[in-house]
Image 1 (cartoon, one colour):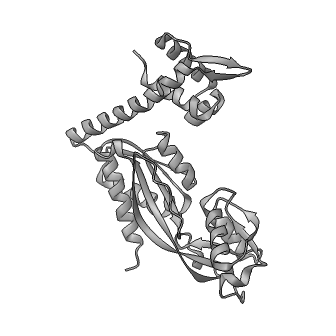
Image 2 (image 1 turned 45 degrees about the vertical axis):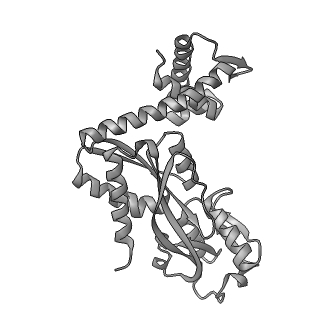
Image 3 (image 1 turned 90 degrees about the vertical axis):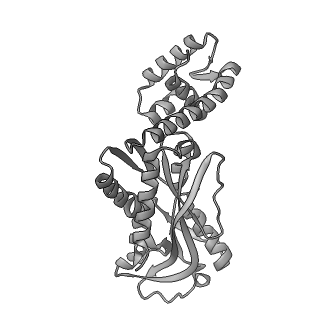
Length: 296
């Protein structure tokens, strides 16, 4: 009989490439991962791994097993969700991953809400970039991913995920107080502060400056933390774009302009877990937190 936990390690090795990467992602030691994979090979009774220098390479038999592992893990999650639904108990652990401003404005209030409503539920919150949150959801490293999309940018909805929009907000052009610019078009020569390459904020900045402003931005400063971007603007060293949830108006040394661009906050879960009462409770708490953000 094949162990599902070991099958997950095989799936992670296929996705990540090295035992060290699997160990780091799942908070195991490399020796534990190696031992469990060796046990899986013994259970399977066929050769699953071949040495390629210092790395393990999956055999064709292992690749076949990876495909079945995906299906087995999906069926197991669906079975657990249906059992929990039949019991009608809101309990257990739900792992939620959210980007910074959503963790502050949505996940934290939801945590307080759930603690009072469902004391048997354990909500674990991790901050991560939107793309990382979705990847974690697809790899079954979390149960709920809070991500975003800007303007005309629409995220691909991977098969097997249920995605809903819970909040929409405006994106602001943020300038040092007293800056004369009234529109993006006037900032072609400015120093910009933006997200790291490949992040949703960088994509927002490039798209907005290119399509609305008519120029490619000179991104001189980069940060994941939107408050760092705000600080760079506050000291007069840059300009940037920030959504309302980052609350740029609280900084007295900056001024903001509306861009006409919206950011949508999305909550994604795997469809196989939709029947689980604990997951439904977390999604409801996030919706309530989003409603509280809407001006009276």
